[in-house]
Image: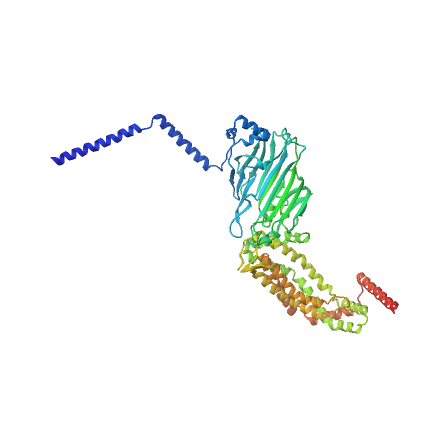
Length: 634
């Protein structure tokens, strides 16, 4: 009975507790008004999350976005207007500090203060140490406009906040940055970003400001930028970092390569702040800039200390007023210094790349750039360099043949030439005349060996300019070289050797060894054929012996910091030259046949050409004057 009674009490207790809980829940239940407020709050939270998730999608800015949220009393507002004039309105408007936009190739950040690009990141590239490539970052760049107003004040856009809006036009993204004088009066920077394109269509336009601008004071576009280091060797990168511009329709010129420089230029089509493999280019799309004051300052005095920036560029460009307003259409290029990409814009931007002047640049653009582009599309880059080197050497093999044929002829004539020098050792003029006569009859002029060699200079120099500027080689590896556009370090030194560096590169060593043996073989043969030095002339045989050691040493030191692709080319080139020389010498040129041809040539009557006759007359006159002078002295 007791147990049954306990069970009933327990049940009653549970019922009471449940009832109390129900009552408490009823008492604390929200009213219908509270339920509606909660639903509204949840809806607002959902809308806010949607807005945040779509911040890079199309946004149309309306006047409600610019409602004055500054809690200024009338006295403060009057003071601000007195100080800032019409631009006081811009200072009362709200806005985010930065607007971020992403495309296929860019991560961009636009600054509210000044309305300019505060950050430009290239998404498809990294630095030598695998960090992102930034063209603009951490205030290395300033892009602003200085203008005068009718109240005799000078304003700079960098001091004022712009209002941003992002919208879409088809696949393109439009970023509008407006410096607002009022709701209907503004100065606008308009950026149009296209998919997978490094060129930004950029315009500067004013609306309703003809009554604000002081047109007697020029409006100046001021663009400053420090080149951010991207490469392993800042000194080598700095060598190819340069301010380049096109003016007078097609003239391309540059400021100083290494020192500080400044220039005032007229009729400018574009300005390129080149940072070796990456460039920031300002293009005058609608009409050339009438004038620009340009400066370039070298920031690398000591590569051990100056490790962040290469050069500081500045451009001050006056913009023309049109009906009291400003309206200028421009292009802003931030991207690789790649001839294939730059050429697509049809504005000769590829001319900002230092291919070499005159014929050297023509050889690169007409021959080596297309040839290497084709080879590298089907072969690894290192193999493409080797194949191109082989093709170049085969193309120039006839030049080596001419040189060795000339050397063979001179070698065969050496006994006769020595006999002439001995016979006329007291009459230098007669010895020279007889020597020239013999060489002319035999068809063995020393110049016939020099001229083919001179023909190779344009090719060698063109390739010297091609490899350091070939964007396709950037960060492409081959054998032990991890980047064919930079040096191939096999050992790091604990100290820095002047002119050499703090590392040891292997390809320059191999190239220096190949050059040494090639010069040893060719120079030794030429020296053996030369006679004693003429009176008053330097001893060429000694100079050539010095060159055998000096040239490889120069290669070893100078190219230690250069692109390993260039050193690879010189190494392979000299190996092939040695091989061609051995083949020509041992299998192609038969000295007996050459001698027979010389004998036939000597037997034929040889008429002197006009140049030879003139030289003979000059030598005869010189000898007569010398004899007359000797008589007077006696």
